[in-house]
Each structure stands twice: as structure tokens, then as C-alpha cells.
Length: 516
Image (tube, rainbow, N blue to C red; front, top):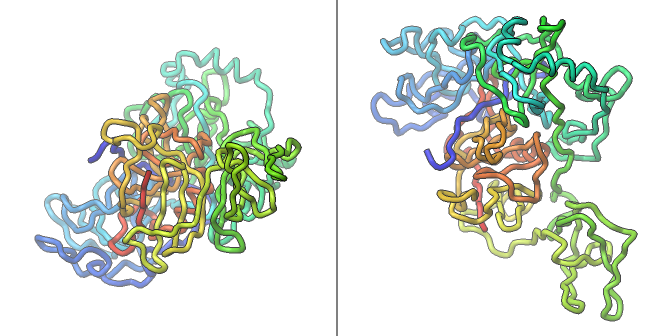
């Protein structure tokens, strides 16, 4: 693995509406035609793709591998999503000494060994609503706390949380606080493009009966429908540091040392106390759709306290009453003028902005050699901290990013994102970040909408902070949740139902072009 390599840990368990994802083109081609054909040994068996509505299998633990071939050392092409289920063949393709339960073909490709970590008769299945920017609620750890493998007894809570008496006393005195709009409050069209400002609707996430979202109502989730994780020892799976981000799927009421206490379940079936969390709603900021009347060039306002100018008779007048917000989008005419020592860019509305106050995304006149008509690719500029989605030579979306904080250094020795031309190696609903991505200060579980383009280098959403436009990461490229979701939904293939992540086939991979 390369520098900063890490394991993907993906979204699971939701009680929201199913998405009905289908792998590939939707045709039930033989598995051998859906994957690589030039294998050594026995190759990939030519078996039918299991029917979508046929029998299923489900994992009892997290990260059960999906293999390319029915062989123990075969390439892993994905993993099962804990809480989900995947369609399987009626009978295993074959049983061996290494897999006595047999290798079952699964939909739309691959094989799963029926070990004790798998059930062939799922009793409860949950789905992930990929049409939502953030399919789950998220929280940030307020003070160091255990991540429990099962619901702890009152005495176990006291044993593993030495400060619990003072903590619960302090929490009991806290006042309920109102919460702002977040990523899920921004309306989207069928392409996952934002169509308006964020508005807290009465049926919004964590909104109470009175139409208000507060620190109390935000974590009111339904009871879990998925079975508990089969791995329950050791009791404490990890100690979560202050600031650590977690995804939440359901809540469970139990007894605590001083009375009732509420725990939330995580996508992999672990438990964390709600009173140790503060809400994380994700930024409502997002990039710009370029498929309609607006296109390049454009500028993003670089800093706070920026105002436009009026240029007359060689003088520049600052329009103090028209201050614009940081990251405000300015559509440019393409004209510029130099007044005194400053270059000014003209906006489409006739106002002028100093070039040094803008991050510009301009029309390309030259393209990389790999660009072909209609083929999707992503242009990432580390120096500018921008990302532009292209279909052939046509830009369709532009936004700001947060890359490695050393910007354009050597990624083997510095906190810099690797430059080059890459193909997507893994597409995942979410991933667990390497702690170096947060400067070792805390951990982040389930960073959403992850595209790994080289081992240890991914593009993903950021629900725990809003760094777009500033290089703050280690090796990864972070986007706001809305932008990450837009990229994920645009970049094929779909992650199949019941999968956590998938390794795309050749021909399904979009290109990521990372440059200075």
C-alpha cells in the first residue's frame, strides 16, 4: 500500500427509503463477462448473476469480503455492508476445505464464502438512501468516551467512564439550544445538484413537532431494526477522542448509573452515548452547476471583507455597502482592466473585483491527452484548491476543495495530495479516515461518498468541518457534503445494494486528474 493507506469503513444501517441500486447496466450477464477474463488458475466461473428478488445473504459482522473468484486468495472487489443484504444464488458454486459453507455467487458479481460471519436467512435488512446528502445523523464527541461493542450495563458504564457522575450532572444542567440549517436542508434535483438555499422544513432531520431543530430533537432516531453485531468482545471497541466524528443510525434506551440513558448505534453496530455527542449537520455551502445558462469563467471570493469596485476614469472606487461573503460565486465576463497596481476582473453584472480577491476557474484551451468526447473526468487544481467536473471538453460543475495542507510537496514526505492521472480504484458509501487527515487530533468515522484514486488518497465529503477553499488535509481531498454527494452520484458505477464499497471494472472508472 502507498503512503497513508487506510481501510475503508462504510455507511451501513438506515431506516430510510431504499434506493433500489442496480449494478452495472442492469442486465444479468454471466459473472465472467462482468469482470476480468484474463485470470490465471481456473479463471472466473461463468455462472449466472443471481436474481434481484431471489434468496439473499447478510453479514453478521462488519467488512465481510466479496471475492472476484471462489478462492480464498482471490482479489477482494468489495465488502458487504453491515445491516444490509445482497442477492445470492440458490446454492453455492462450490465448497472447499478453505470454505466449507461454499462460495455463493452474489449480485451483480463476485463470490462470498458462507462462514459463521454470514447468514443465508437475513431476518432484518436496512437500506441506505443515497439520494440524501447525508443518509445518517452525525455527531462529534464532546469528551473522550468508549465506543461499545454492545449495550453496557450501568456498572460497566461506570467502570469504563471514570468521569460519568460529573459528566451526567453537567449534562443535566445544560439548556436546549437551537440548531442551524445543514447539508440535508438544501433542496436537490434528480442529478444531486442544489436548486435553492437551505431551509429547515417541518419534516427535516431532527426537527421536533414544533418545527424547531434543537440539540435535544436532533438525536431522536428510531429504534434499530438491524440485528446486533455478532462481535461483542471486548466490550470497548475503541476510545473516541474529543472531536471524533461518528455516524448514527438508531437509538436505544437503557439504564445508566443515575437513571435512563440513551445510546446511538453506529453503521457497524457499535454503541456510543448520546450525552457524549454534539450535532454535526454538515455545511450547506456547495459549488456551481455549469450545465444551464452559466459557465466558465467564474471566481470564488477568497476571503472575508471583500467588496466589488466601480472603475471610472482610471480610478477604482470600493463599493463598501456591497460587501460579499467568502466563497461567494462571481460569474465573470472574461474582461479585465489594470488600474494603478491592481488587476480587476469584470463580473457579468458590470461590477469589478480585484483579481487577488478571487479564486478563478477559467475556460480551458488545452486538455490532457486522455480526454475524449463525452467521457467523464475530474480536474483537481491543488494550487487553486478547485475541482471541476468535465464531460469531454465541457465543464459541468465547479467547486472548492481542501487538499493536503502542504499543497504541492512530495506526498511521500509531506502532507500533500499526489499529483498525476488516476482511475478510481474504490467507490464507497463512506470511509474511516487515517488520523493524519485530522493532524492526529481526533478520528473520523464514515466520511461520506469516498472515491479512492490511489492507495491512501481519496476524495470524500466532510461533515465534521467546513474546509473548502483551504488546504487542511493530509493526503486526501475533502469536499463539502453536497459537493461530495454530487460527485459520487455522477461518477459510476453505483455501489450495489448490500455492498459497502466496490472496485469498478475497467471501463467503469472515471479519471481523476490532479495537478499543481
